[in-house]
Length: 61
Image 1: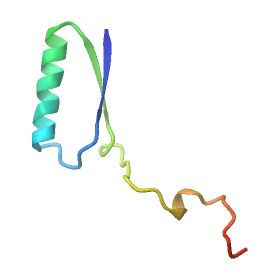
Image 2 (image 1 turned 90 degrees about the horizontal axis):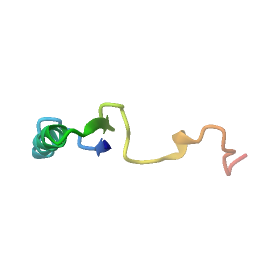
Image 3 (image 1 turned 90 degrees about the vertical axis):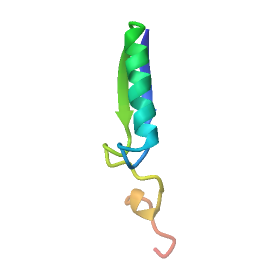
Image 4 (image 1 turned 45 degrees about the vertical axis):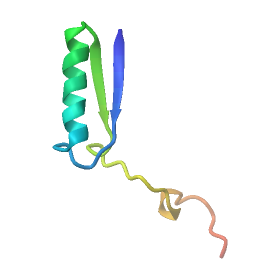
């Protein structure tokens, strides 16, 4: 079985990061194929603002 883990924490050396490491180890020990999607490593930002929609006409136009 394949497992995708979405990790979203700004500090990889946090408790959440340690729990991620344990989860990966345990799943791989069970023979699972594990893939990690680290949102902060991908420069993901948690908020959406007007700059995310440059082609949307402004209300002032």
